[in-house]
Amino acid sequence: MLAYLIGRDDREHAERYARLAHANPILAGGEQDAAAGLAMLRARGWLVGGPGEIVEALGRLAEAGLGRVMLHHLAMDDFAAIELLAAEVLPQAQDPG
Image 1 (cartoon, rainbow, N blue to C red):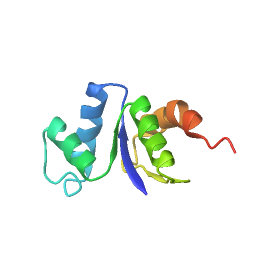
Image 2 (cartoon, one colour):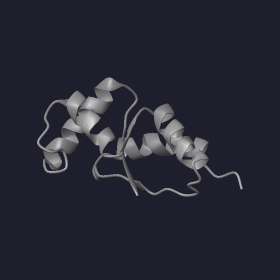
Image 3 (cartoon, rainbow, N blue to C red):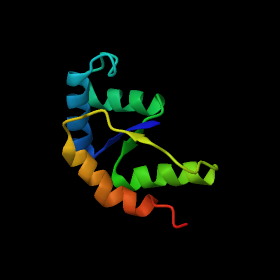
Image 4 (tube, helix red, strand yellow):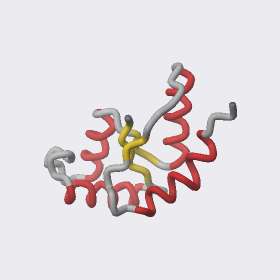
C-alpha cells in the first residue's frame, strides 16, 4: 500500500500537506514547513507530486514487476485529491490486459 499526496502545483501540494499535518501531526512528524514535510514524505516512500509525476512513479513500479498497487488516501475529507487522481492518473495507469 502506497500513501500519496497529489496536487496540480506547489501551492496545492503545500495546502494538502498543511491539512495533513494539522489532522495528523504524528504522521507529519511535527514538521510544519511544507517543503521539508513533502521531502520527508517522499523519503518515507510516499508518492508526492502532480498527476504526471504519480503516473511516472507508478510506471517505474510496473517496470520493476509490480502488477498491482493500492493507493492509500489519508486525507479523508479531501475529495478534490481523489477526483484529481481519478481523472488524471487512473486512466493512464490502467492495466490494458
